[in-house]
Amino acid sequence: MPVWSEVNTQYATIYVPRGTVSPQSIGERIAQARRELGVRLRRDVSPSDVAEALSVSPATVYRWESDEKSPSEKSMTKLAAFLGVAPAYLRYGVQTPAVLDLTHAKPLSDAALDRADAITARGVPSPRKKKKPKGGAA
Image (tube, rainbow, N blue to C red; front, side, top):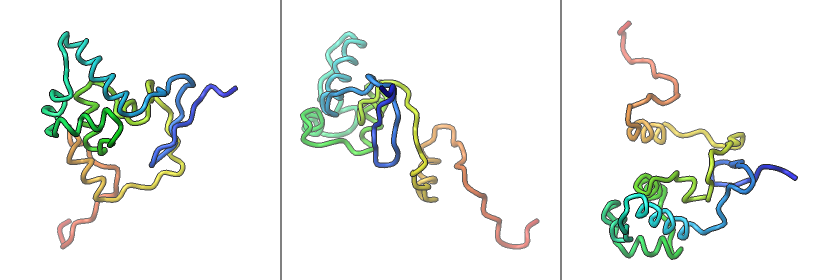
């Protein structure tokens, strides 16, 4: 019996230890993470608190938690940071570090790498070739 579970995403297949993928829906995981944040903070954290922190409407958070709508990738990243969980946990139910199979992954465009550079806190340069400067400067 394999000890790994496969979680197929839009970009790659993630292999995680069997039994570490939550069977809950995205909405259930969001609501649970919100309640767990409340326990850690020792106060109730309402969907309205989440909405205010993410600059979305309370109705949007209610839709996420009731699985009427899924958060965008940008909102999912902000939501995970606010709740103190990994985005992979909210999106896919992955509760532990995973092994990624990127053999079928598509390379990122320069625009995507530029966006990644812009949001990286320390400004880590992207892994692409430097363009040669134009002109006669040596």
